[in-house]
Amino acid sequence: YYDEAEVTDAKKLDIDHMVPLAEAWDSGAHGWTPERREAYANDLDAERSLVAVTAKTNRSKADKDPAAWMPPAESATCTYLVDWTATKLRWNLSADETEQAALLELAESCADSTVEYESAS
Image 1 (cartoon, one colour):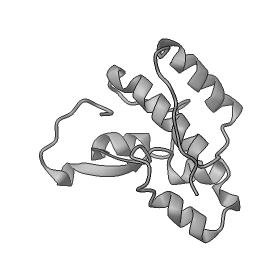
Image 2: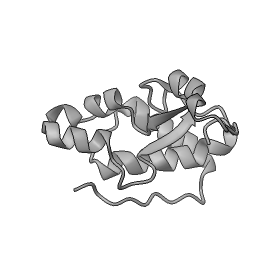
Image 3: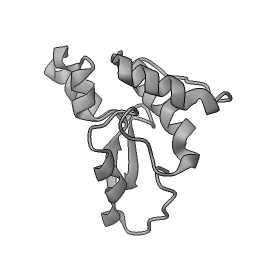
Image 4: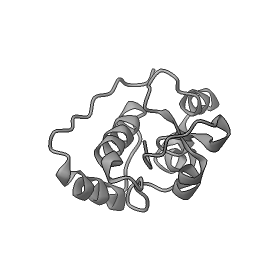
């Protein structure tokens, strides 16, 4: 959904960690046990944690947070912000001041969006 591209060849897709592993590390995962880090990296219990996206778009995202990267499709903005925030909350990850400011500013147009999540065990 990041770029509104329709893909019929699975080779052109990547599985994106909504909150990249490096971002998770910087946001608190560095203090987790190896088992919890593995659970995060392979979280299949929340549909938004791992998402299939075009390889090109995933590579442009790399390990950036919403202050540095947003999906190119404007239609993806609110969904992406909700998914990002829900993933951070699910795993009790922090957000730095720059990230928080970007999330608040970008979410101004998402008044009808609600963040729902279930805490990771």
